[in-house]
Image (cartoon, rainbow, N blue to C red; front, side, top):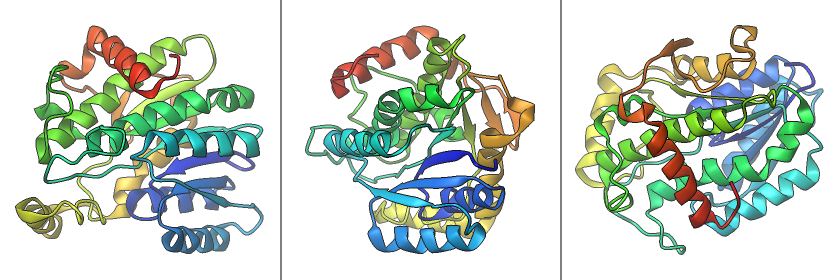
Length: 278
């Protein structure tokens, strides 16, 4: 990874922070997208401790808001001549249906639309790298979901989260199809159930349930980050695209996640919502 530029969202805690540090240790220059400036500065200190030879940098945005997604993508594109790896990792779970200023359900906006918008608006920088990789954090929670396009943003809690993770896999599937022949690959992963800050803001019984589960059987962030690091740099996956990975190995997602028709329909809907071409 020496000399490569990696853009990663959700890198100020949990598996994102661990993956960013490991990739920095391997020689990469890390560009993080964060909302919280204090945590971002702490992450940058860790990255410089891991690799002081690279000029790691942070950009700031609320990735639940379409305008912020577009603004930060434009800032990164203006600052970075090439991007070797884009890691879409930002995500949250909410116990109730919350709407953003764009009228989007909060989890759908953050967990899916930010992946879609950043990827499309940074595509020229990915093309400039030659052989770039796109890595999206999904989840086994997708197995409990089915896409109902009439109710796509009406769910909440675990069911709504599972729907957004199904969207991640379908987005990756359609993205890989559209990138065939370009040299850019797109893969997604299940990191495992990891003991991180994830779910701390969920509220109510959902938050309590997640906290108990973390204590009983969650993986460490170091274990959870392994597949992210693998997909970002391993020569074993060079040229492979459209896959879903778990524990650094290919896995088969649910039948719903393998629907090419739903993948295309989701892409077209996302492009309309974002107001950008596909």
